[in-house]
Length: 68
Image (cartoon, rainbow, N blue to C red; front, side):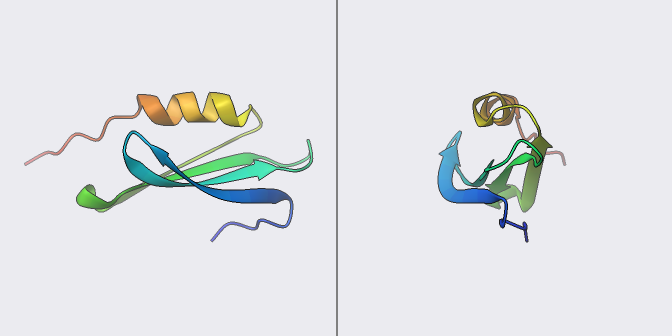
């Protein structure tokens, strides 16, 4: 669970996977993206003071590799 008192929340899709996007409302807080890779039972959370656009680029670059 993310404290969204200092952010706005929206649902999104990144590379075909559901994502929660928390955009900070103050420079004192971080932007957060949580991507849910359901088929792999994996979630990735990316946090930073950089822009949501930059965080999205990072999230789009992530590839989940299934290992045996």
